[in-house]
Length: 247
Image 1 (cartoon, rainbow, N blue to C red):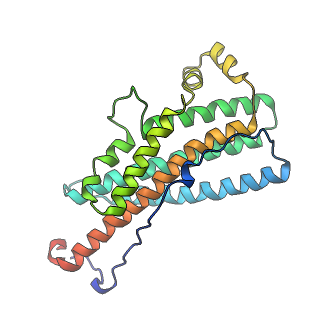
Image 2 (cartoon, rainbow, N blue to C red):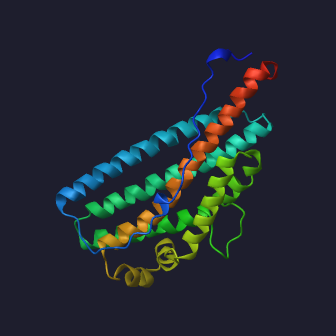
Image 3 (cartoon, rainbow, N blue to C red):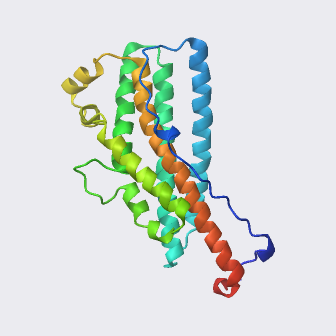
């Protein structure tokens, strides 16, 4: 039997998030940051990357602890949540690191190179998260989450899922998500790379475009933390009421 104190099982808080701030529409202002502002932004990025790295390590540890021979419904749901959470944490960290080195680049070629690589991350991230109109639903992170939502009937979970579902669809529809740049960079099409990299380079536009995806992913990140907390609370309640199931 698992050695756990039944009287001291933690109950994790479920947050009543509203996602307006995560999808706030901000227009580029053409302003270029000075060196002090640039250093401050880089420090913020480093802090956020460290947080996501801690999530990645935690999630990997939890995934490794899952029993391959466990065919329970709980394990299946937990695996979906953890894999989705790993994706959003990894993508957020990757995107922010690319933003950081775009900001730090002191040569024009370096900045244009980093902008190209950043747009690949942005395109592939939104494609993997929710897909584009012509994409099949299979393999999409948001699809896997939608398939387990029947196990979370609570009003908070259902309302948050519905809001995120609507906002993610709007997010995809309002932009091409840089397919031209993604194809050129990924397939190493030299002529296309030259053309796309020599478009006007406006720092504020690049950063605002990046924040579109970071905001969407961060909203999903918070929602997944709620789901995982809810699933853990359910398991703890089951352990309190039916400890014989854990023998």
